[in-house]
Image (cartoon, rainbow, N blue to C red; front, side, top):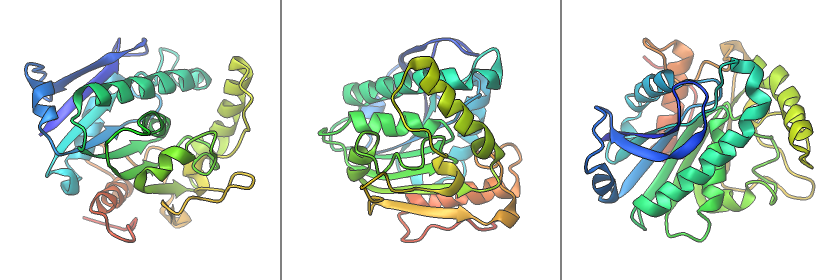
Amino acid sequence: MNYILDFRGADIGGPVVPGRIMRIDGIPLGVEDDLRRESKITFLLHGFNVNRPDGRKSLLQLAGRLPAASDGAMVAVLWPGDHWVRAISYPLEGNDADDSAAELARFIDRVVRPGTELNFVSHSLGARVVMGAVNRLLGDSYPIRQICLMAAAIDDFSLANPDDYRLGVATAERVAVLASHEDLVLKLAYPVGDFLQAFFFFWKDDVGLALGYHGPRPSSDDSIPEQVYHWQIPDERNSGHGDYIPSDPPSPNQRSAANFADEVLHRLDNPEYKEVA
């Protein structure tokens, strides 16, 4: 069964609001009870600069290419990582990602039955929502199986850093990272946006390259956790920031990315980014 979990207060921009869960036909009646009966749930999250209709459409496209998750519930998570001024607002969206992470963790604590297996697949800034939520679930009785971070717009050292997501990583069976050197958004815009977020909000934070650009890096004296798996997309595939979540019809690179996520969810030892039909 596929569901929509909506943390948006508006179709474009707007505040983060408490989550509303519904079936893909829009019917909310009894959905929380249905979800509570599931033994396995996979949460799918879009990234930055995606409005509500586009997020819904693209995540349902992704769900259709993840047969490994079809034996449980798949939940498309909509969150307000966009704005009327579109990409210009990127430095301001970190707070929305953090607020969405908090709401996602609250929703799981309130609705999902303890012992339910959880998986996560994200794109871009959705990685910040996922890892922030997993951090907040520390000590809870939810087995975190697979986390797949595609083109992750979080710092390359953050999975190793105890002040960021290392503790959350330790609760997961695996955190799989799919990265591309040909992602110009992460190569050029991410470091600038990271710096401006620190400037605007007076964060005492290091400014690094993106995890989704070249994969994980150690943090000072802290090594990359053993749960982290990294696949670097070959440069000749020319995989940009929009080449992960499937459109309709999906491009060859989008099919390869979705197949990688599916192999992660299948718990294969070495998931691959490869050409698929």
